[in-house]
Amino acid sequence: MTKTSKQKTGDWGEQCAASFLLQKDYKIVARNFSVHKKGEIDIIAWHNKQYFGKTLCFIEVKTRKQNDGSAERSVGVKKIQSLFSAAYEYCMQCGIDIDHTPIQFEQVSVYFVEGKLVINHYDIPVD
Picture 1 (cartoon, one colour):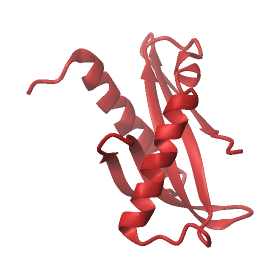
Picture 2 (picture 1 turned 45 degrees about the vertical axis):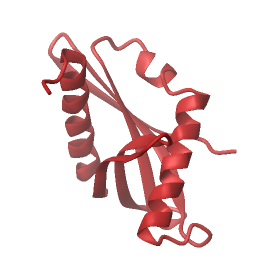
Picture 3 (picture 1 turned 135 degrees about the vertical axis):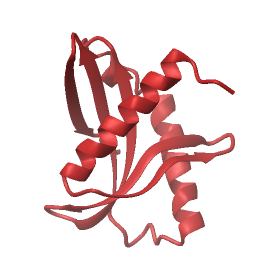
């Protein structure tokens, strides 16, 4: 199956995000982890956080051609819920003790406008 232009742009953005995270000392352990009917996680990585130490990070990547904040706005409640469900399934499949492992949900927004790459990195707050 051939990919659409939008899929190719998304793949390119995920590769940019992965390179960005590697430069920030993230250790990527999985990409495009998918759980049937529960959701998908673009990047899963370990990172040493200042206050929590070794932390398992579940990262959503959004790529846009206009730097207008639309990538950030596109991750709403429904997407966050599916991210949580997929993350839980990943932890169960990999034998990760969620009660004793720091976990962080994050978003990387990739914008490519007029030949310039802009990457924004955020923590997703969890209630």
